[in-house]
Length: 490
Length: 92
Image (cartoon, rainbow over all chains, first blue to last red; front, side, top):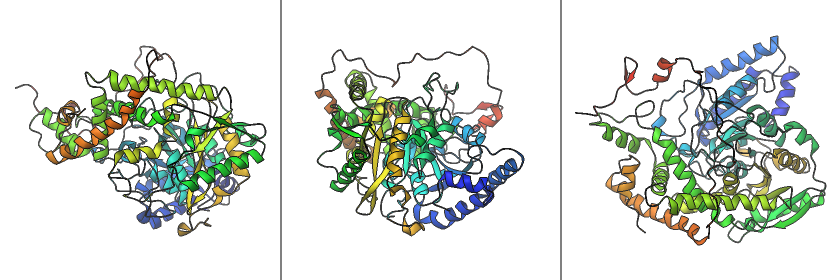
């Protein structure tokens, strides 16, 4: 049962074979047993989680079950929720318990879900390996010497190890898709504006988007159907977004006649040869199932990481100005004046990577450099968007590797920020363009999971879900789970 | 170009110890060296993208929608007194 899909758990709950209380107990037992080796969870309130589960069982006894009735879902430590501390993996928010729920948390509660604790993450979602967390690194259940990806590393590790059936993550430059890829699960970043950002601690406001991390494509669609939709409380939540028949898209499972673009810039020297081979094999299989593979070019791809590392830090430097030691969060001891309070609280509260990004952003926005850096990067962002628009004139969907390499060793890339930044070379352009992207398992490289990434035009998550469901139904990569955690292995 | 890490840290209101400044200086210069590849592209006449969708900022009615939750919101503050946030003296 720990490796069951939500779909499966729902059927068992509906049939009365299990209860929300039993499920919560099962996953809490597993968290108690395995979290020491993974460090996937950073806040787990055992009693309040059991109370949520019992409340769900009572609801079910009296009413018709809601769409996620009694289903435990782990939550990245970036989503404000009133039942638990929310610390964004940072010392500066140590002990902070929000006074309100993020919009998506409200949606999950309304759907009957049980919030299963807060998961580890890179500090303020800034990282690709979960190594910048104030709580220490999280580990990959396929090999605990390796990273689970980041920044939603704890959510990925928890789902992959069967400590939760599903989780919420956020994705600013690949932070859902890359960890999903390197831990062998499904993760989707919806179109920018599809999911409300209210109550999600902001990193880069024009890039951040929340999404599901699950075992199956259908589970991703189910959670997306619950958390998406307009929220008047978020000015960037799009009111007239074209709607999607989330579950219907999965049922269609259509590969026949699908035009899949294969961008040459995403199959390059320098990427892991085995990763490349697995993704090529997946495309071949799609072709055998009736898809047409079309070679395309996204010519500005090589500039995406550079544009991102101007835009995201610039937005972060503005967003993180709010941590001033006044209204919430850490304040240094005995400040001698206001400036001392600001500067020392922020020095003590922020880790090295967060400081690097704030300073990079403050520089790019500073007088005399704004045009050369920030404005220039925004112009390049236009070129990157245009690349995708041109490509979608020729193809329905684009397929690429999610990450150029499988999970790397903890500590392997911490000395060189640029090498770490390049971990997201295949995911970042999707955020810059505001498009939906999904990663799903497509094989193993040296016994480590490999991810296949699907990218669709804005608001067309249905194309991704249909293609990914078709691929999933023809393969069993998603059904392999790490042996060390009781799975069937690979 | 060499970034003045002390000056930028002052702009960002982050105190840096000498050790931190020594480590961050070269790292920031490397990052800026990397993003300088953007200068290779001719972007004259290209409109900047600030946001993925070109939507106008929505407006709402100018009406109070929040209830007064001062006590709950201030519960997270490091120092409050009589409903006010307390900070070190600003003006002598």
